[in-house]
Length: 191
Image (cartoon, rainbow, N blue to C red; front, side, top):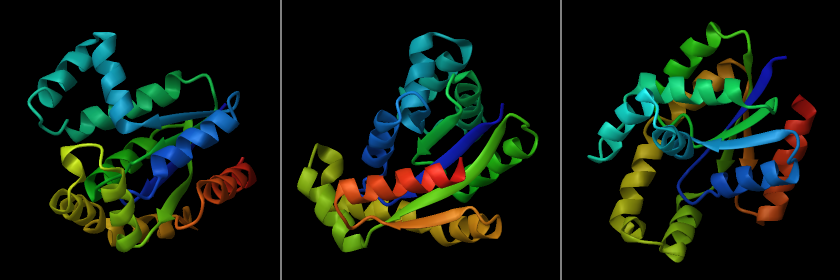
């Protein structure tokens, strides 16, 4: 049975993680939700060799190498008992996109169904991020940097997935309920 993978991307403050969590809760028996950060943390907690390698990077605040991130994602998807996987916040770069694409080409068990982009204007994203101010990373300067990191590879990521006919954009400037309903219905049309 092929696993059906849905990626959810969006700017900081677009609500992509909340949307993905709510969709998984709503479809508890069928849809699993992952975020890349959670997967890496779970791998560290498992005490595995890969977990120790990951911790060597994260404990110093360094980025985990791409191959390790993609391997960790693919391993989690394969071990998941549910057949529909929603992964939020990936890919964040062209390199991440290409690395996942390379692995999926050789994977018979996983099929990328769609990349859902939750679209919000920079103004709305900024209001949300600065409005929730959870810590040091929620100031204007950090927000600008995070926004730049998101926007820089975005056109290339959009073009790539449009070329594969899997990009689907959703208006993220509505109520959470409206957005989650739309994503939920969209996923159901694909499965």
